[in-house]
Image 1 (tube, helix red, strand yellow):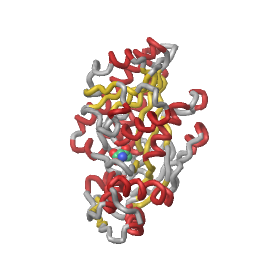
Image 2 (cartoon, protein in one colour):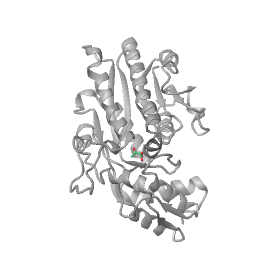
Image 3 (cartoon, helix red, strand yellow):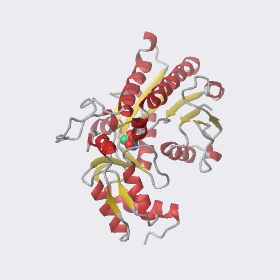
Image 4 (cartoon, helix red, strand yellow):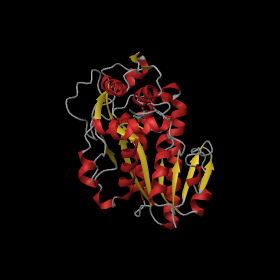
Length: 334
Ligand code: AKB
């Protein structure tokens, strides 16, 4: 049976995706690549856990061929805040890593048949003019002027994927089938992000459940699109499984809801009256979020492959976040 390769397996999306794939198809071999050994939560679900750097051209070549990998979820990346601290390292990991995996996908595709390559892009590909006077949700072809190294890397990698899918060495037969999702901020009940700029939402909620005070690094009026982790995983799998003839673009916006930092704080306080949320904007991180759209138009994903989030604002908190995070920390949700 052909296998799935997941890079960045220990990351937030990686862990959730691996659990979901294993629950749906326990017999499907899962090969992973990460800098560190897999965390306990996913280690038993993995067929072959490779330890290494995505920028190393040889690190997963033999294993990918041995298991006949036919689908790659290339999740390994440094996130936006981390990237502004070391833009050149970010470029190396995010761009060279993607190029390396695309090269591998091409070799696998040539040997065994076309390889699906699923790539999490981001709302960071957008760069809004100062002042953010945008009245409508942003569509995929608008405002593609990113102001962060992370956003520039993501946009460029979307183009690399399009090139490997349709034009690599101007071959007539494509070996790679590249598809990308532009994710909003993602919130998980089980894990915390590191190095992102939408992290304040997850940090605020996880802190409240643990009874810890939290100072958000953005203004309370900051409004961004967000999505729950189960919806993000579902979107990745839905896009991976959609027949190519139904796709009209390489990279799709996906969205659940748009919410301000103050509204998240109010929802948290409604549930945990003792929670202590304050706002202490960090100028660098505020500039990053101010360049991102506060809402994105995902109508093409809805019409092309039936995208629709399971969680809206209310149900995200009542049905997923509050019960999930309370169970995670062993806290009562009453
Ligand atoms: C980040 O904050 O860097 C990510 C993203 C929006 O892609 N969550």
